[in-house]
Amino acid sequence: MVLPIHDINPLRRRPVVTWLLIAVNVAVFVLFEPIVTSVAGFTTATPQSVCEQQRFFDHWGAVPAEMLENRPSQEVPNGRSAGVDPQGRVLCELESPPSFTKSPVVSVLTSMFLHGSWLHLIGNMLFLGVFGNNVEDRMGRFLYLIFYLVCGYTAAYGFALFEGHSSTTLIGASGAVAGVLGAYLVVFPRARVIGLVTFLFFLPFWLPAWLVLGFWFLLQYIYFTGTGVAEGGSVAYGAHVVGFIFGALAVTPFVRELRAAGPARRDAPDHRWVRRTPWS
Image (cartoon, rainbow, N blue to C red; front, side):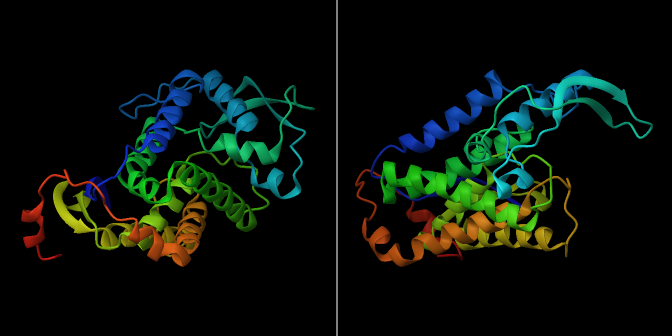
């Protein structure tokens, strides 16, 4: 795994929409979500807090079984704990019908701004911050926002086609961010990215975007198809794959126009030393 830190790709304007998306995601996580894990990753959950979080996600998250039929579930957690089973799993009380109203179509939108942990949030926002600014710069702010949301919807419904029977809640910006990554790979395949290589003790390397994003997509595809073993079985790798492919295909017919927009900034820092790397 390569964690991107920065890319050498000049901007013509401030990436206001990318910054706004990051700010909204962070604000929702901090201000509205029932958080049951600490920054360090150690669980601070109680059975009651787990059930409260599960009810929140069932209300605002996307559920594949609900999406395909466009009909919300009639039996949901009520936010109160019913104890813990012998395997240590938290049991939540259920209510039927739900005391809240829900639109499965709208829930796909709200689910894009929910995250299950600090690690989930930081990972998505890191990739969005590094790669989203240049995609926004070439598309323009309004079109970029529409593109981001459409990628999120496509990824969610694509995942639902594979897991239509699932009642597990789908949350996170991963599908939309994956679409942005696919677009970046098509438009800027040779852009230089500094990344921390995890299996080399997080040492930083300058790498081409096609290698960083291509390897990221390959991992998602391997985990999605089950040919590899991924940590965390609840990760929706199918949504990542669908979002990435859609984002790449959506911009392919317009790649000339997007590249022709050109980095118009004349005051970009001098990075000529980077061109002496083997990836030039």
